[in-house]
Length: 278
Image (tube, rainbow, N blue to C red; front, side):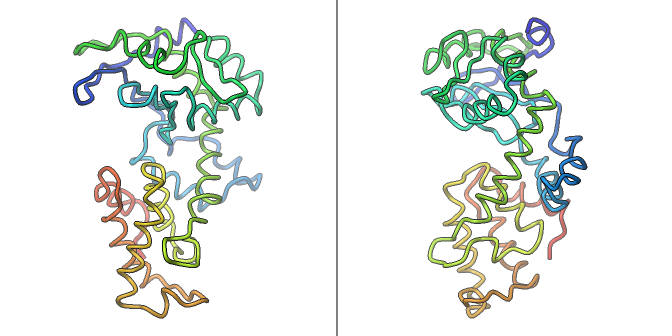
């Protein structure tokens, strides 16, 4: 833990009128080294790899952490959070990691006094909630250009950077794409999103929004379908989709630039630079 505290220095970042710590990280999603192993085991596909790797420019790094906004902290490539109650997607992720890899969990988290309880609440030295939120920001509350150590966050960087936790992050991305995002049914439609998307670019564009603002996906994708239906009304609402790339192009060019999320146009263009438009 001491070495992690020493090596992982954090910047002080201004967020509106407050300040807090941030470690940008160095490991991009595209640098994940175990794709071939996952694919050979049938735990991922080339399509999964293409989509998730393309998103690397739009997401945080695998070992990125920040604690300056409304949440206690945000960690990893999918920007999972611990909310002010000590719960949240990152707490859930650590709990699952604990069940899968108990020895690694003990070494990476528990030995450095980060605890993920059976109630899926994260604590540091027994402290959680608003008290933990305040403690993480205590040494980063005033503007400075100097990087500083954090006894709490330094070890957490090491934990999420570890090969096993990188694997956990990628597995969660794969599950989210195939079992959550592509099964969303757009508002006012009968079929899930997967029925309307044939390309890696299309699926990456939806996953991109879901990571940032999941609650808007069903509505925003429906709006894009409504826009496309002006040209192809029968195809949009027909019971048997005969979707083609020409229709998907119209859909994506609208959806990609009208998604309610931060920097929607910039992020969509990043995806188009890596994945071909149909």
